[in-house]
Image (cartoon, rainbow, N blue to C red; front, side, top):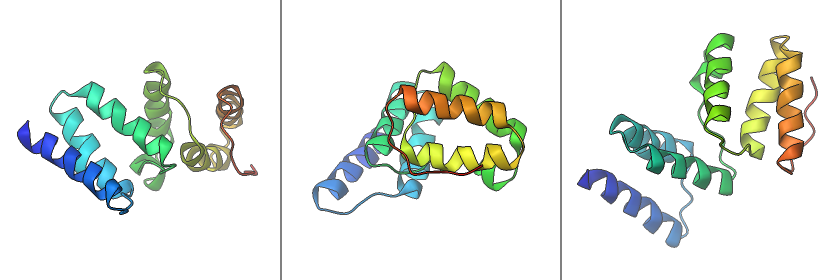
Length: 124
């Protein structure tokens, strides 16, 4: 667990020195490691930091064109009560529309508005 603490400290130091972490830094270096080691609260804090920095998560299921996996992932995201943020919306909304999942895309839009999350226009 010391290595995880060290990785988190390194990330904090990067930010303090003006180096902006990216999706790879967050997903690979921290979030995955926290979840693999049962440190779910720490993993959730990474989501929040990504949202604050407006960094889109690497949702490999979108890249893999796996609609069912995206729907399961989003369901888990919602179940955990995590807040939507711009980059997440802008990753999921076009994908859902492209796949014809207009009802889920609409729910995502409604949730984004409810969360008062400012996003750029996305056309379905």
